[in-house]
Length: 76
Image (cartoon, rainbow, N blue to C red; front, side):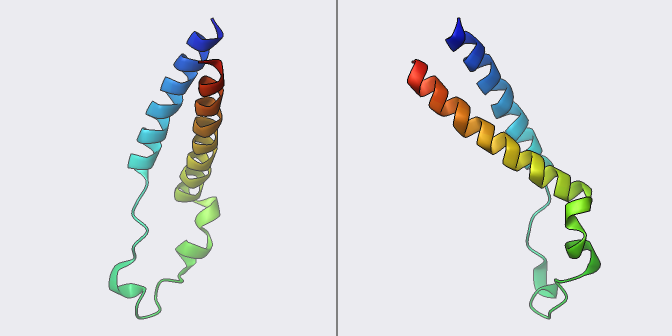
C-alpha cells in the first residue's frame, strides 16, 4: 500500500518536474554577456519574476524527486 502511494507521488513529481523544466528559458544571454550587458535589471530582479518562481519550484520538485526515489528504494 505504501509502495503504491509512493509510486503515484513519484510519477506526479516526475511529470511536474519535466513540465517545469520545459517551461524555463535558457540561461545563455548570447553575445550580450560577453560585452558585459548580462547584468541587467531583469537578472537582478529574477527572484521576483516568473523565472524566479519557476526556479524555486524546480528546486523543490528536484528535492522531492530525490527523497521519493530514496524512499522507494528503501521500501522496495
